[in-house]
Length: 331
Image (cartoon, rainbow, N blue to C red; front, side, top):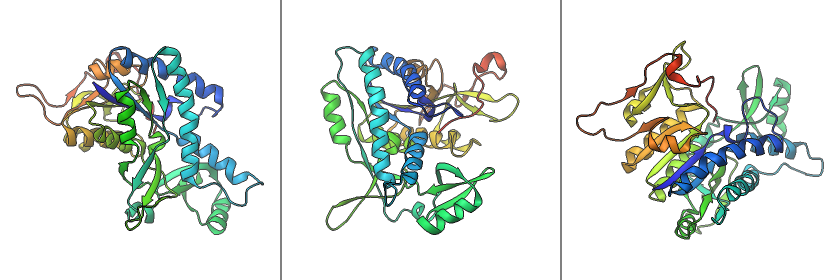
């Protein structure tokens, strides 16, 4: 099978952890063990990943650097995070897959310059600000800020991906037997001039899960795995006894009351891929990628349920059935 596996932000940092290199390397070491099992089982593998903490860190450093007349733009910072995360994943996978080609590819994602998201920024990025700091950044740098809990943070546009430009190159690498790491952070967002074809980077962040679904479709992948820090998609999220969902359809998944900014984009990406391709999508735990593709854990999503079989299947509720209860779902 050709599998696109999208790693959640927890692949590198757990909520509340310091973004130190050693901490991220520890988590990548664990993620690589799970991903390597897919390759050893004979599957072709493309890996995408989040970059929220990393691009936030680089943006904060760039904003505070006295040597710069202006901070680096987000598209350039996004490319830097692809290199940062890509090298960590590449080394760990090479260690676990001796003799196998593994490569990380800086990847660009085309977006529509007229996407409504550019007029309504919603994606939080960077450090917390006081109300006074937020007003100053809006005045001096033209930022848009929004309330995030007790603080303010910068918000940037999150346009929908239209095309992953390096998908043909990924196909070539897969044909040569390589494991490919690409489309990190949703890819570097670019727009294309309709008259000249010239590409221009934009101040935006593309949702990584939607890009993973689009890339999987472009590559004719047999399956999309979205790997995160929960064992399943849970119904009644936040209740005393949330219900883990074993199998579902795109329609049912979209109808669930899932938290925005965490599980909701994952559900939409899985539903979209399953709906548009008829292939398997699954959301499951980062430490058991093989179990997620086999259906022994996680939530599988299929566009049509076979005749004679039940529709959405919820596992029995209760602590014994839940495994690790979902305290949160990271983006």
